[in-house]
Length: 417
Ligand SMILES: *Cc1c(COP(=O)(O)O)cnc(C)c1O
Picture: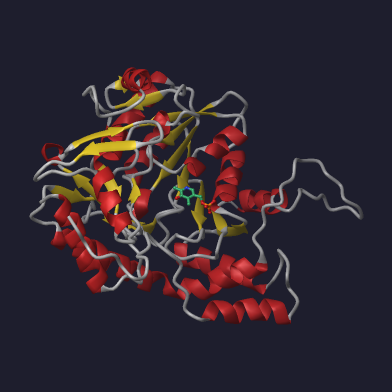
């Protein structure tokens, strides 16, 4: 198939500025608050806690540092197991390891692509001692967070939400990032709104917010000199970064509306193809539609092999696969992306425990480790592996025009010719 390349690259999800950002950056400059203290920081903490309906918002350098502080607040002991979403970005899991904890991965469900509550219950049967659960709302689609929360309550476990991708998404009318005891959002450059970088820890606990303010500014004790009783971090957000976030915050709903329109157009454009879009539980949740993703029906998959660092496929009439579609998009100067490769498949975490609906999922992973690739020997896949194998993220930039999107739809359709 030959498709004409886009003159300007169509991005997966790039920053969208509106003009106010520069005003707040200038204000910081003119008043000389070129620091990790200043009015922009104060204002975004106020605005975010109000918008989210959450007691406290602490502005930090990154979403990852917010997650690290959340894990530290939960008081993980060295060697302690923590239940984590499996199909996610490594940054949602690594902070557990920073604190000496051991992530145990919980398989995903097809309903939301997020942590499977059934597998989570199973995990508590196997490891009743676990006290902390970290749940991700992938691609801006809320997990079944009320069920997950009640499972955590039943087992006396602390719930942490990684809402890095889901700012503005709600579940049963409540913002994601406000269900857990300690939660994180991110303003990384490709998120729904950005500060270039930056993150916020959300909590209703005044004591926890106070601790994070102290830890993130080198844990200074009130004394005339630098006095330290606790380990410190340099994790506070810059007032310049906060200026960008402050300029972006009024546009969150506009970005969500644009991303939702992109999702709907893809859905419409693919309705007669053997594919589905990432699922949305319309009844309970309002996603922020950060990334539009698609999943190819099993019967419409051409032969594809995913090795450790390479993908191979053989074109077939009427069929396609993520590797082929991503290649075609890249040829046309459009940026797609594979689904987050599940953590239990990552070399760094391959030896960690992994729990599926059926119980211990390590058997399936062992097949994968033994063959070092998925796709060639037809062994059964767990849900995360399956979505990784058959799914992909489509260009979802909110500056993409309808014409550009129509061409992307055509390119994808062409792969199934
Ligand atoms: C982006 C992201 C993070 C990390 O946020 P940073 O601000 O980049 O540190 C964590 N978890 C998930 C799921 C993310 O997508």
